[in-house]
Image 1 (cartoon, rainbow, N blue to C red):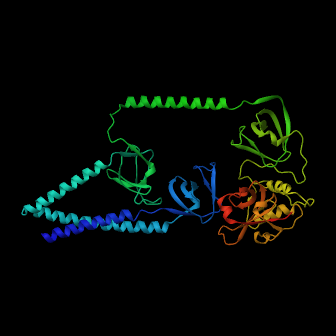
Image 2: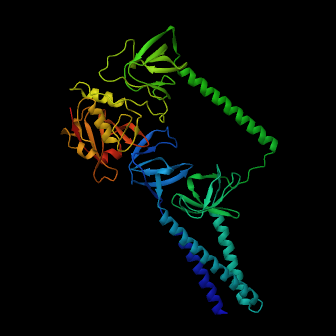
Amino acid sequence: MKDKKSMSMIIIVGVIISLFLFVNTTVFATTGTVVTSDLRLRKEESTSSEVLDLLDENDKVEIISENGDWYKVKANGKVGYVSKEYIKLKDENNQNTENTNTENKNETEEKTDENSEEKNTSTENTSTENTSAENITEENTNKENTKEEHKQEVPSKYKFATDVQLKVMPVINGIVINSTNADEEYDVVSSAGVWSYVKSGNKAGWVLTEKLTAVSTEKAEETKPEEKQEEKKEENQQEEQNQEKKEEEKKSEEPADTKYSSAKTYYVKGTSVNARSKASKDSEVVKVLNTNNSVKVTGENGSWYVVEINGEKAYISKSLLSKEKVEVTSRSSNSLSESNNQQPAAQAPEQPVASNPSGAAIVQYAKTFLGYRYVYGTAGPNTFDCSGFVQYVYKHFGYSLSRSSGTQANDGVAVSKSNLQPGDVLIFRDTSNSRIGHVGIYIGDGQFIHASNSRTGVIISSLSTNAYQKRYVGARRIL
């Protein structure tokens, strides 16, 4: 009998140790790797949200949580959101951990079954041994007391605002074993970093702690269906009133348009001028116009002109329109569609213009290609790679530059970063940071224009972003 009792105690200790190892082996941070260059780290889960930083290919990020097609991550000391399709998780480590934990769980279940058989055998023999029965009774009583103490330690239950997946392990890509419902209450059994292990009836699993909402353990009085319906109706009415009030306040804050007695014709005096849906630089762009495009001005609003484009009202900054056409020294810009996916009309190759251009002329001409597609190995006139774009722009002014980014690093004369001027050619290492692999044209104010990649085409970027600060090599002055 003593041998059986000793064996039972050994099995119980083994089960406890296995469970302890199962819980602790899953506590580790989830990291991912960026699989593209110039990945935008955004402030919110939207492609129109503010860009906090640009992440480079092979950069490491700490994944905090996931929501739909977005990961919430921490990178370079900043917390923001990135698209899931451009992040590669460490699947191999997680899968190995999951397999190991599954094996541990199976072994634990087998040992538990053996333990149950031993207990059943002991129970059958208790009728002949009163001392053993008393010990078992005392042990069961202690277990019940322990459970009661554990319940008292958890002062609250928790709910979820939305349906949440329960996972077998505290990792983002862990196996989903169940999901929650909005009306269910859960106990938090344990925690591991940003994860909590919750349980409700026969449902249990790991969830992100931030998705939990604490509720009082005291049962609220039952509300009749009629009362609930009435409360919901009042809430909806109050919400509608608040929304109407906000819209009225917003309208009262916006200055009214001053309408002219007759429309006037003005001309665009800049390149890539935005016509917007409201008199604000933060409003939606409805049309992009270029030098000497004509517009019908019907009124004004503060520092903005009210214009009519394709029968619709829009706004353009007064500083960007003129009553007369402006004189240009290079080809006129083509009007671009507001859609980023629409390719500008094909153009015939151009003859070089007079030499001795200014840096501003180089920049103005380069900006006419904003939105053009990136195609590796091409150098205009309708598609470019990075060095092909720089070569094409300078060729227009009679300068013959080398064809690759590596050889363009030797064109012209070197210039320090503190002495950059518009028109200077900027040299960068490739995304692996091993050799020269990218070039662009400095346009002033810490920005440069370049044929970035196949996703973005020709764009304007900031030199202050982390990705380009790390890859910056130097600059060459051609003029």
